[in-house]
Image (cartoon, rainbow, N blue to C red; front, top):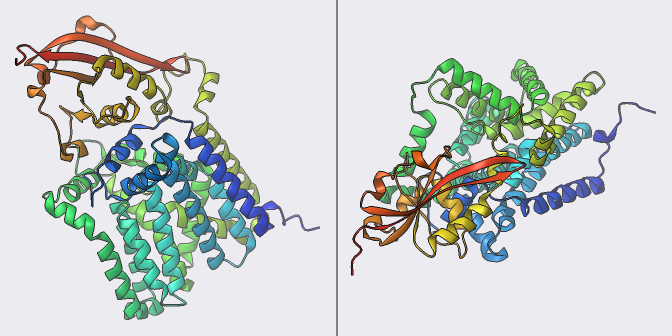
Length: 493
């Protein structure tokens, strides 16, 4: 009996299909249970106004939500349906890429196992954000480019997938950057640059991206400018602190042991760079470039943990190949890393597990778990207070959640926000000064109503009722808001 042949090396096609089907079924059931987090509700608002672009991101996330809600109705399940399908497809494509890169069945099995048990993949499949389609189309573009090293017609598929990735998230341009550098670094790759199929692929991608260009051209290039400043603008913060925050965030996203092993695997792959073919270099550059780019960016701007997320699929492929290469010596580390990842995935799925943590240790439920609670109560409270009057909120998060969870799903608006939002571009925005009655929502942590001061937006209004509202989950307060019902001091006759 060969001790080295364990479960990850003998996954049959039948068992693989069962694992994938079970993962998707669990994801779909889970997605219908949890309330939308604010960004999901925000993207759902976009989907009610189909366009070629939006201020914060390209339109793919809104298009997918529009399609799923048209077919399945408006619900948490429908909003997240596309996320589950994109994540599921991402797993399939990444496993197929691993099979193309490594003849060892253990490397393919490890790729599937890591992705199925990864909290990152679970998040991509359970929260509908631009990352979900970007990761699916991004890895599909990489897989097509790898296939094109053997058959140049695959460049056409690359152009199609890359164009859809760019319609999902601007950072998908790093996929093309990685592939371009890989082509330039190898003699056979440089020959591909002379292929008509390669240049046709770029034309296809450009055509697909034109709606975003057109939207920006009609809105003073607002989205391009917003994202450029958001990702690269310099802030008055410590570069060292930002970098440490970035590194810590990646160890949460990638999980500690697997990310550490992945970095070692990348270093090992770099040490044999001269022997790598074009396909191997494509995968290597695709794993390195987003991580490195946003690592450098963090020196000037506070990073978000999900920014280099496109690195993690090719990184998983490299890691799986490295683990399988000397499995007898590395299987203990692999099992430890996978076990920790699985544990983190379970915690991510079950915020109720915080019941086990004494309140004196944790003052409240940490983000992002608390964002899945309290919004239905929030919508009911606004229904009762507004009685059909327009609702204005001081953040896009409050406005989007109100719009989704209020009865009839009315259009809710933002006011006095700290940055531009897509609400500023939506048609039909009423002037608060022209209204006889409205409800104004602002975030507030204080519970003493005596400290409340009417905001400047209500200067010409007379508050009729001021309500300090809060809701609890898991025996803790997760949300506090001020609701001000106001009317004009001298309403028109």
